[in-house]
Length: 422
Image (cartoon, rainbow, N blue to C red; front, side):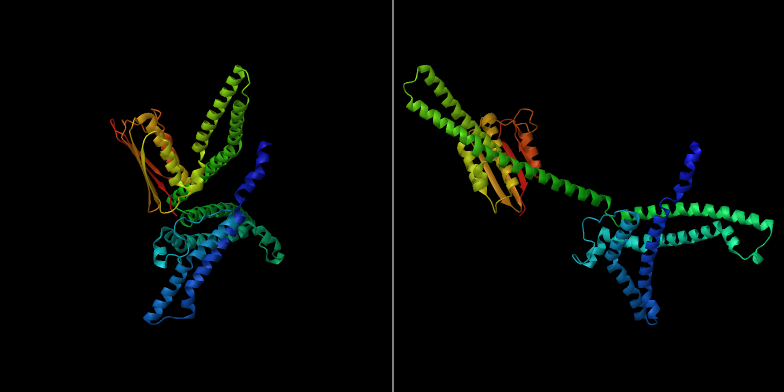
């Protein structure tokens, strides 16, 4: 019973997809016939005798094939998609059409050379294979149905000979076997054609990797922008919500302390403590808001925001900011946090007497240099708790570069470059 259940599958399996593959090959034959017709037209309607005529008859069809290569490529992609269900992606890099960068440069490109290789070599060979498949289908069908032909033959023409009957049986078996072989050949040839098309009409391995890197970079930039927008939203919510409530609470406690002078001493102490803690909470919340995304950075730009950072530090900071144009909000935020966190580390760990910050924008790059005269020994790996590793990761999130030179005894120099193309 188990073998009988598999019998229909064994019979049908070689023919699954054979009809679709044959239709696909027939479409390829039609396309190659059109190309052959274009190449042969000058020789059919114009018999060249002189040298110039031979040149024209050779150059014109060749130029037509070269210039029509992009159109032929799109036709082939449509054939693979509609007839075989295979999507052949377009190559990355140079455009498929030679109009944007010139015919000569386009012909020198790798996608153009691969396309011409397919159209002039692989396509004709697959078309010949398709013709062979059609011939084999016809031969197999004719041989397998020989008894049908004998039945429809008039009785007076029939050959009543046992030897002929045996030969007809052999021919029938051979025809059935040929049909099975042709089905396998059609499917195999279609698969080979699809592989060749993906290799020659689609992007190369290097182009796929380049496109993947570009997609990942774009995706990462989107994530960074979304995170920065979320930080700005949280900053606005804290500033407009919790911070205002704390300020109102501190004001009310201050008024209570000033107006309610007849309260018991214990109650006054409680109000004083609550007032002091409210002011400390406001100060901590201000620091938190500035750490998320300072409002001055969004309103007045990088120069004003860094000036505010330098003014709040307990050591003198020489700040120099030179910007050709305002960077993007994401790059601006990264630059601000790099300078802010680095100067905070200088105050906490370097025991420096001064620091210098230089921000300069040239040729689509934002260069930042932060120098201090402290003891040095900063660990970029972040093991010592200086947080430089986190800064390096934040810089890398926008395709920037981060370097830190901090020998023992100082000075420490942190250099950052951020892309800020217009």
